[in-house]
Image 1 (cartoon, chains in turn blue, orange):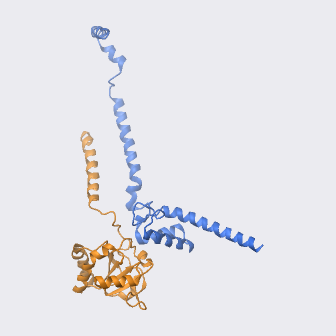
Image 2 (cartoon, chains in turn red, yellow):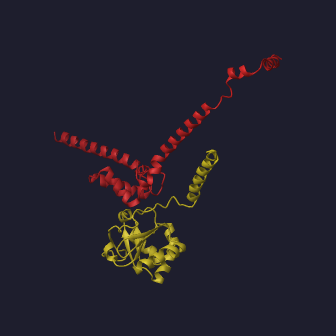
Image 3 (cartoon, rainbow over the protein chains, first blue to last red):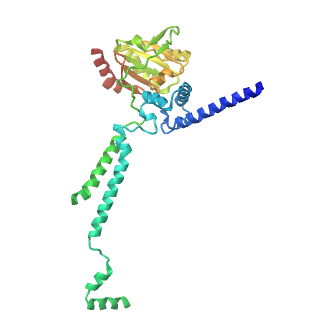
Length: 146
Length: 177
């Protein structure tokens, strides 16, 4: 009976740890390792990354939310630690620039299409042939038949 | 409108070229610290030479000082060290040494071998204070003003140029105020 309770408690504790591990894993994958800059905190083996993982875990165990932990790191290392930069004044160009460019491209595309539609077509065969006089038509046919 | 045909792409090209050109001279390893202009994080650390005594941020109030983060295991710390020794001789500004993630005995041996330019040395055994200061690559050097505000951060080894052109002029200006 006691054994069963102990087993049950161990299982609950383990499940809590697993949930925490999963949460930390997700969080650490969004954070940059400052030493090896193209790796995340989760991937890096740098000593500083190890320390920061420890720090992040302790903050999480102390009941801090993911946002608190992100704010803690940003206060020390700047927005650079976030792989997903925040939307603010200095990052508007980064976040919205591509959409502005896309819109500009679509506008340019339609302008060109419309201008092209207004121009006389080069290859409208029926109208063009009708204006050619019979003699020229016969000559063309003779050349083609050769 | 016809002139737009060639001038617009040219303008865009020149802007991109400008950005790329500026990018050539920027070091991606130097991450601007968000702590510049903010109060130095509070710490209370054991001194390297007298472990029973501590030094706190508060103890340095009222003077301009440098905090030099170094370690005996750090290779490029050896590169900047002669500059610090010279600086100590000139006696213009107190430098506090922070032995980052270092064993006290290793730190003491290193200072005995290379000269001790520090007014005081403190030990950050587990790197906690380093994290508070946003340290990510030793050596790093902070300029801290009389009010305890961080004014400048040098990432990587000090250079004679950085000292002469940036750090010392800043120190002199801060000492006047």
